Image 1 (spheres, rainbow, N blue to C red):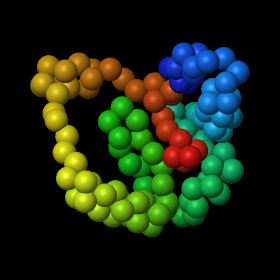
Image 2: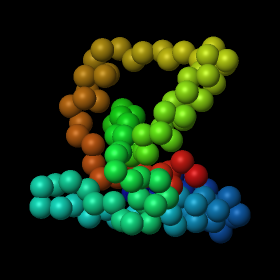
Image 3: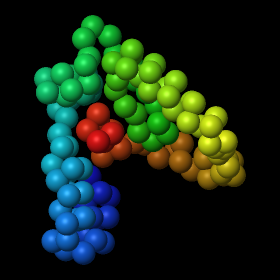
Image 4: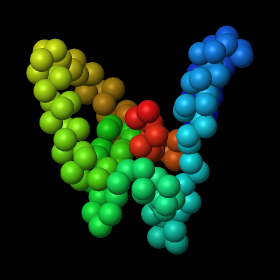
Length: 119
């Protein structure tokens, strides 16, 4: 959240763009509590928003992850794959030293994405 807030500070103060992005990103954020075992507890409104019932899909995204209804994610994954193929997208891999440095850094709470991040 600190990185997002700092990035918003780079925009023109009180501009429509800055206001809208702050409302959309920061206004939709949730502080997620942890239980005694260190697991996050999703608030009911996020569970409802994500359509989560009895199963959940944890989807890794590098340093972050997303939590999805498995059926919704299956549709998303298919659509994403189709767009990648249609665009001819590819990924240029970083040198091994750079990826090793990233692996040594532990994700923080601010690296966890919620369904609102998709908005």
